[in-house]
Length: 215
Image (cartoon, rainbow, N blue to C red; front, side, top):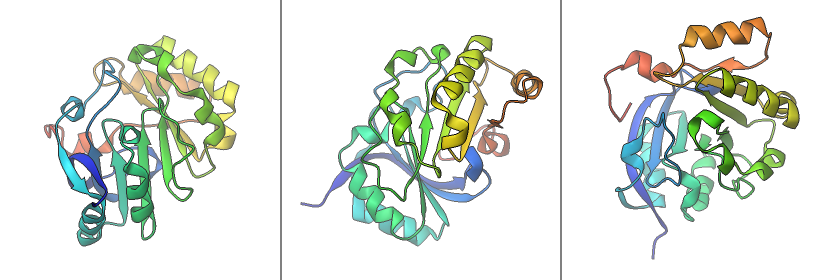
């Protein structure tokens, strides 16, 4: 029997976040999530989707001719087949994995670039962060904090210092939670504190502001 994962959608778009912003990218969005963050913009991925053979997903990616692929969700690490999928993808092109920070990343193939979302208190799920992941981050990986307000900002600063994330990651990204914190305010805090983090503004939403999914 072929290995499968449950897929909500695949699509081609412009990578909108992290240091990979602006790259054309093939996205594989897996179904299922163990969190319900207050600012979630992919609630349609909580459930549904269909089983999809991992070799067919890899073939679809290669057929797209995109230089980059991202596996996201939902929470992709909830599905056992994701590790074999990542091994297939990373053989040929740069491969990103975006994970919500609650699952162990130690089994992620070494050449995959992990984007680790660290949940702030404003998400409602800061108590679900799997802190053992901090020692598995590599120099090519990135961390992401979605900031809902001042409390989240100060909390994130303490986490960065506690785990020395600036030193251990390629980048630390701060994203203003849509509808909860204005980008200008977050930018002013970062500049005032000379904080060596990257302001993350979801480029794809600026290009396609009315697209509900598939962008």
